[in-house]
Length: 114
Image (cartoon, rainbow, N blue to C red; front, top):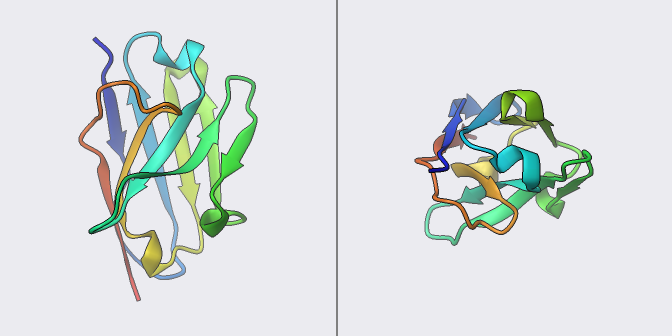
């Protein structure tokens, strides 16, 4: 049973930084492009960043230049470094494969105050 556990969220002022972590059980990291998702209040869950096994990355336009995604396959862990945070980055952040086809974790809440 694959389990995804997100952590690292919190309350931060605009302009601040947070580093999210995603720990996965099983072999999910060794075979998949992974992604970070964000669900803002009242909105659908959306992909904000992804990273392939080889380390190629993709970012949604709103976070380009501010967020960095990385992964440590040996540790089955993925990270999202979020800098220059804005209030519109507020939401619950989840990790999953880029297809979103594994059981969702509980997510980690990120709140950016203005």
